[in-house]
Image 1: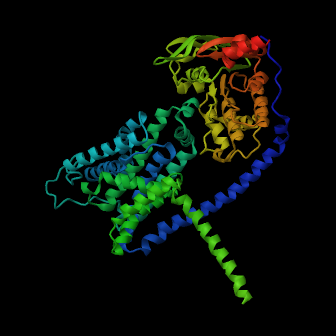
Image 2 (image 1 turned 135 degrees about the vertical axis):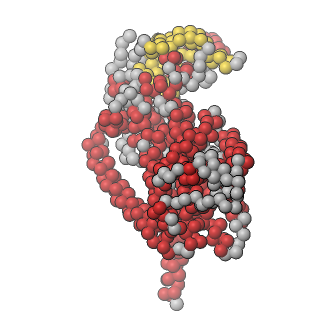
Image 3 (image 1 turned 135 degrees about the horizontal axis):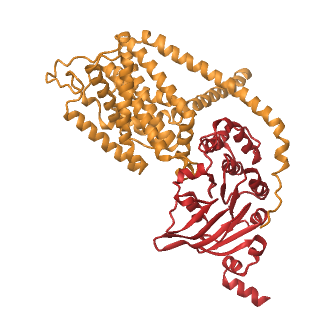
Length: 369
Length: 244
C-alpha cells in the first residue's frame, strides 16, 4: 500500500489567517459593547424591581408580583426543558405542588433557616421530579407530554386525598382542625409582603444565574445538540440519557425552590390551588414568552399571574385569558417560534419605522400648503 | 487500520449488509455503491446506532462493537451526516469545541485546538457566529471541523459534498485530502461524486445490495466490470459490449 502525496488545503484560506486574529479581536470588542449595554439594562430593571417596585405598588399588586416571581422561576425550568432540550412536560404544576408541600412540611417540622429550607425543597423536589422525567428517556413529543400530564394528575389526586398540606407538627403531621391551620412561617427578614417580594426576587435572580451558567457551559451545549438531533449528539460523544435527566433535575430543582417561595408567599396552601390544567396554561405562557431566552420566563410569569389580577381589577372575567393563551400559543407555534421576547423588540422597531415614515410623508405635504 | 469481517445486518426480511469483509488500512479510503447498497448502514454500525446480526469490527486492535455508542466518540470515532447536522443554535466555535469537550483531551488545549480545526477547513468567518446563519457549504465545513478536532482515529464522511456547487466541492476535496496528515486519522469517504472519490481516495471499496463486490486501487475499481454493471445495470453493459 502506497500513500499518495497529500497537499494542504487551499492556500487561499491561509492568506487570511494573519488578519483573522485581529478580525476576531475587533468583533469581540464590538460584542463587548453590546454585552455591556445589555448588562446595564438588566441591572437597571433588576434594581427597579428590587428597590422601587415593592414600595410603589399597592399590597394587591405586591402579592401579584410575588406570584409572578414564583411562576417566572417555574417557567424558567419548563423553558429549559422545552426550548433547550426539546422535551415537553405537562407535569410542572404538580412538581410545583410537591415543592410547596415539601417546603411547608420542612417549615412546620423544623426551625431550619429559610434559605436552607428552599435548598432542601429544591433538592427533594429534584429527586422526585427526575422520576417524572424518566419516561423522557424512552419517548418525546406528544407521548411524553401525555405521560407527564397523567403523572401530574396522579400527584394532584394523591395530595388532595392525603389532606395536603396540613398544618400539624412534624414532617408528616396531621391537623384535623381545618379551620385553625397555622400559617406557614416566612424568613425573619421578610415577614411583610413587600419584604417577601424582595426576598423572592433575590432568590429568582440566583435561579436565573444558575440557568444561564448551565446554558453557557457543557450541559447547555449538550442540550442544544440533543434538541437538534439525538443521533448527532450520540455521535458527538454525548451521553444523552444523562443530559436529559440532568435537564429534568434542573427544572425540578428550580420548581421546588419556587414551591418553597410559594409556601411562604401564600402562607396557607390548599390542594385546590394546584390543578393539572395549570400545567397546560403554564406551557402556553412559556411558549408565548419565548423559550430560547431566559427573559421569556419573566414574560411568562407576568402573563400567568399579573394579567389575571389586572383583568380582575378592571372587572373583566379572567376566563378570557384561557382564550387569549390558546390563541397566543397557536400564534407562537405558527408564526413566531421564539415568542414575545424575540417578537416584541422587532415589532416595536417596525412600529417605530412606520411612525417615522408616516411623519416624514406628512411633513412635505404640510410644507407644500 | 480497521478490519471488518463477515459483518451482517438484518432489518426483518431485508439484509442491508451481507457478510461484508474488508479492511481499510490508512489514508482516505472510498466507499461507493448505488443507493441502498448499505453504505449508510455500515456507518451506522460503526457509530453504534445499528447492532449487527453477526460479524466483527476491529479498529486499531480494539473491538469497536463492544463499546457503547456515546463512548465511541471519546475513543476517536467521528462522523458527518448525509443531511448535515451542525448545531444551529450554537456558534461555530461551540459546535467544534463541544466535540473536544467530550473527547479524551484536556481542557487546556480546547481553545487552540478548536480554532485550529476551524482554520484547517478554511472557514474564514467569525467563530462566534451562530451556525444557523451560515450557508450550506459553510455548515458542511463546520461539520468537517467537528470531525477533525480532538484527536480522532477514524473519521466517517457521509456524502460531505452533497448538494454543493463544483467550486465548493473542490475545496471540500482539498480539505478531505489533507485530513489524514492533519488529524493522523483513517478516513472513510462515502460519496456519489466519482470525481471527488477518485481525487481523494487511493483505494476504494464498492458495495452493492449489501455485498462487497470490489475493493482495491480506485482507478482499477472504477474500471471493474462488476462495478460498472452495479451502477449501470446488466443491460447497459451488454449493450456496450455489443457496440464494442
